[in-house]
Image (cartoon, rainbow, N blue to C red; front, side, top):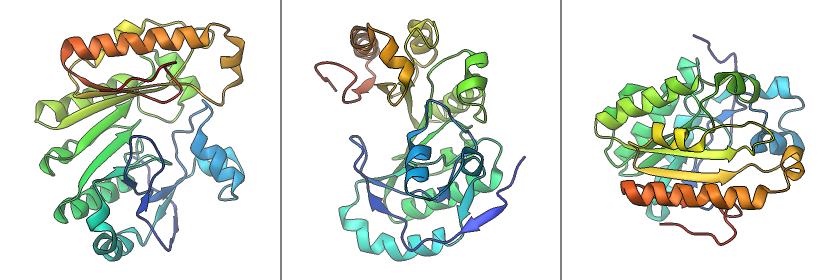
Length: 261
């Protein structure tokens, strides 16, 4: 088990997100030990705006030491406007192997729930079973773009093994929690050849699936049939979810004619 070695303070924490399926969000950690190499949009933005200088610095996470203090002040200010709060869009609330990150995330979710605010969480780590004790309005998700561990070690080197993620999500689902999977950023066949149906079958128990293409990757432009490929996979998601009565969302720019349900 690892621990965060550095702390930072912030002046604000809760903010309205511009992400298409989000409402309010909170990022109570700077950086991410998962070190994803899609490349990671959050890392690119952090580097662009001078929050970090190197990939190595990014993969050494820093906890926001005054996160709970800020939250106590900001919940009353924003509560009337909040439909839900997402953890997290620029980091990971259950960073693999970091118990102190997970503990703070649970405290934050619990505080928001006590204020009658529902939360969504997304991780490439392992979802703690303790989450099942919190509000039944919460929704817990994992990112899953493959089942190939060799690929995972290359593209998501610090993240949890795929089957560990799925097992933790299934455990929460069995306890009655609402669960979801983000299949994004999904790679094209020139990056990795894999069976998309097999991935869908592994997560057929969830309540919702989000699917999105890979962006910011030069290899995608080399795959001439990328548009058709993502259209076909988007339709597979729609058909799969319709058959199993699973909610779905196809990210903007993934399907030529965007559909959602």
